[in-house]
Length: 280
Image 1 (cartoon, rainbow, N blue to C red):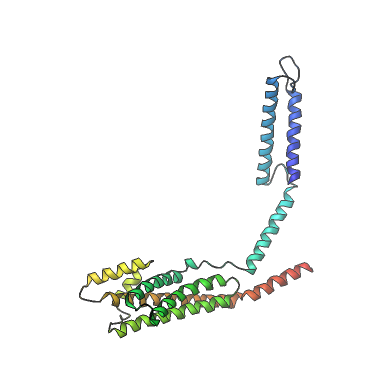
Image 2 (cartoon, rainbow, N blue to C red):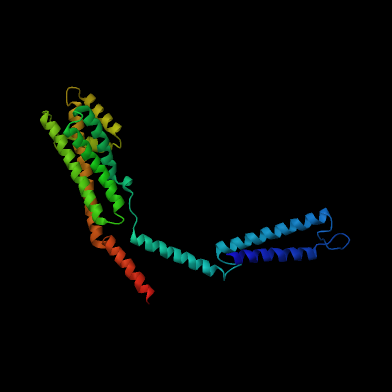
């Protein structure tokens, strides 16, 4: 790199000497630093133009891989190739992981958690064991999805285990909502009930949107279902959707583990390849 810029400086110096040898005054004398302000200005202007032209053509040659430094591009290309190979090796050891916020299961589980906190604070006695268990089960569903996603880079087994824990926690929460309905003599909606499909089609992304849907359904039929009944049944539907998504995730994670192996297998493969290359 330094050699290239030294070469640019050399070209600029040579250009200055050539310009000085060709520039002459009206009397036929060469322009030098002692030729007065006009002569000095002319020299510096021409030298600056030459230097900028040299710098521009040098940079253009580097980016387009031709012209000025064809021989000196080879070491740079070699370094780039080594860097890419090093990045590929690192990605092979610890693959891309995380991204749980983009998972639909995580997004729905987060809505379930937020609604459950509001529901328990309003309809379950604070400080009771049921209140704490429902909130913790909802929280466990969210946190284990996130933790499993982040742990997948170094342990597929941990990812599968935590995803299954999230599904189990949400199933526990679903049973708590069903118990709430049964103990208060409120009906559990059938699978064919159109209200179940209504909350699914609404695609609520926040607790406020779920609350708005519950209020709208209650207002449309004042003498029908109560707000606790609608809210509890809505939560059982959303939890069922989240569990179905988690089951699909588990199937995909298991299949990937069977086909590509886990972190230990990747370490062994990378180390074997490195050792084989070293002793060839």
